[in-house]
Image (cartoon, rainbow, N blue to C red; front, side, top):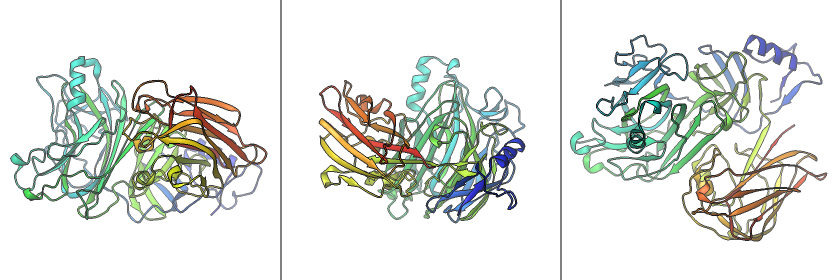
Length: 551
């Protein structure tokens, strides 16, 4: 289906703050008409309604899925009228029951509006523990998003260090004392706490280290999506986590595939949770929370807790610095009705983009709400690691695998991160690599899971030469490349795109920026990529990405 949107109508929409399609009379061909044909079977086609917090917005397209999320609790705390010294009652819960709430409304800090929740009082003698115990029916899936502000100006260094090692920002469990089944009794257990640098539990034997952004004296958003397979709960699960710092560029994302529960059937504990604590265990530092968004999935079912709509302020979702949810009122495969939350968006004059996530946490292509069209960004990743787990795990990215061990040196029918076919192909003309190392490096400063950085190839001698064809002549292409090694040192890798050159240092487990270089396709619509050790020593390569704009 083809969409047409004129510059004059776009200006009108910008002035009045209304987003919608042109009428039939206004859909006229002209030199400034933008014609965009969405690709694939999962996309936003049109957004109509007033893009203002609380107003009804209708999103049409395809591939959204048959059902949206079931909310357990959503709040920005600005509707609370209690004084700052009164306990928070969480009376505006959307679904389920709320038991044993604690925390205080505060006007000292706010990510959106004028109020937030003070979780910890910030001294060793008195602190608020167990904040926000959401009690619900058994569930095997949840999605949690919230913003956190650590007020380090009111704590000493030892308090901050202790906090990082003991806090449990999100804590799920079953039974009154799921963290201690001997005290909680039969049916209790399955506790799993989530924080920026670790996911584990007292009554489970699983560990994962997502290494998300963590900040002091500024707002940071953390999102967690966890789903277990009801048929194989002790071995098959997915966990995804991401973070971004409000007002600054950059998102960190990571993912986990494998078990999250220990088998506790001996205690008559089924593989489900029945409660979520946010701010479940915090100590010695004033911590403010804002903009809670909690959705759950039913016991024994694969549900849609991750299904959601987000607005943001950049053409690339992972580079946005302000975001907002859209609270769902109805959800069908081709139509969603929802109401935007305030967030920290500039609704009156700033850029507004939108994405839909389906029930598997797969993201649609970014949609420009001011121009009412899908963006024309195309982004493809070529992984030199084992990409099977990446694709099975990280639904937001489809990955093209280049595996020298299998003789896969010619890659045709490439797909972008949404899984949509691209018109380009890659021919590996020569490759001189050997086995690198297998490990779990820290992630780079891009929105990728650490699986991209595992199973690195060691690049030797003249390295890798690849030719990419199928572009339009003169097309501008942005190339990124990265790899990691397990120790510090200078493992400089040179990356060439046509005649341009740059480097990255594959040291320190990936704590560095990937190489970034831009060039133009030649008259035949081709580019040449060379990757080799810059200093004669071994360097390491995990992935290459290619990004360009469709006309």
